[in-house]
Length: 181
Picture 1: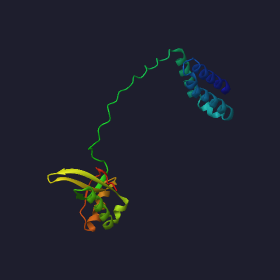
Picture 2: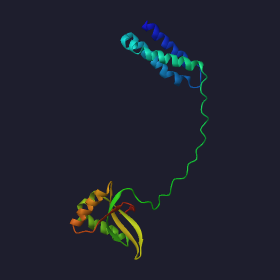
Picture 3: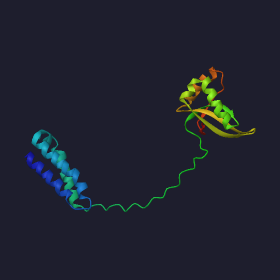
Picture 4: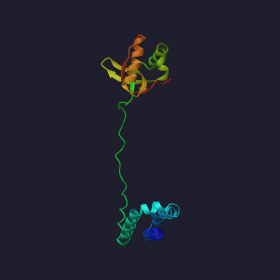
């Protein structure tokens, strides 16, 4: 009885997938694999097939019903999508955190300052320097920052070390450009 039931399910699966369509091979593959699995399971573990007989019967009925109904129409070809241009991130604020250590008017002074701060604060060896150009009432300045840090707490920890060494420091965003040299 089990073998007959398996054979009917296998024939039902095979018949349903052989209706013919542009992608029969790809759509038929899972059904053929299931039919093979059912046959192997029936041969080696007949109790499993008997336990699943209700589900197999429901699957067979669903497949046969699907066989006699007209297939759903395929979706219309996807039209070429138009995307908005990427936003201009020039001037956008970084999502990473940094430690603002000093401000300079000249790039060369910022480079010297970074080297001097590295001597005074060994923790800077693991950080990268960045400068942010800002326009203040007194003119343009280059803010020297160290970072990047994933959290404000990490930037504050570096600031605590800097302040313990007698330096000024303020946690901020890591916006800016890499310090050349």
